[in-house]
Image (cartoon, rainbow, N blue to C red; front, side, top):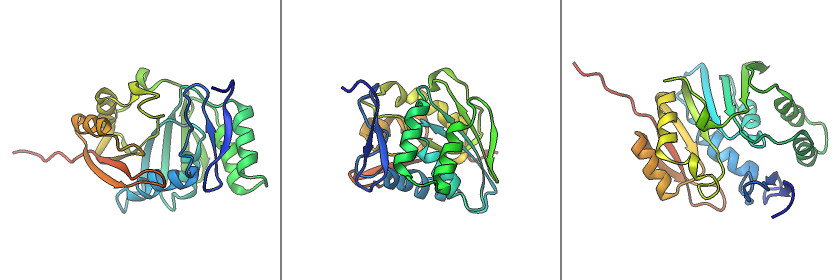
Length: 229
């Protein structure tokens, strides 16, 4: 295993990072942006109910910040309040190198990416018109989340092999409680144990076509509870 995190180029030309700590890449080597766009934007952000004016998003695994960047770029007229948690943030040298490699020129995307990373930790700020963000430097297992609050959850931890403590029923139950009825959770994993744990937590599941290199991904919905007389 290398002594430090390593930048890699994925198959669609976008960058990712191989983590020294976990021995995995932050994104699919078949295409980092392709994966994030399909899993978290097309099947997540663009699947929130039509007519919603404000969307509360929680992301497990800030990582490189790609999901945050894409959410800001593709939010259209939706106002977003974005909360994300990361126990092991990238150091500035790594994310700056990532930005230069992904966008050699000073494009608007690179500027926004750098602003996301420069945003202070553990503080809600308005990053741009209609997009506020709070990056929490914390362990998901040690924080409390508000009940019935989030419309959308991006579950983007490293794999179950690397972080088994984050893919269990207890964690999914915590997220289920934090979500509004009708809220959705999206993840790149469609592993059988992940499906069983999501169902045990109360979610209804959809198995969707996955990004290149993966047959399927999952979208989980918190059902509406019908009132009884």
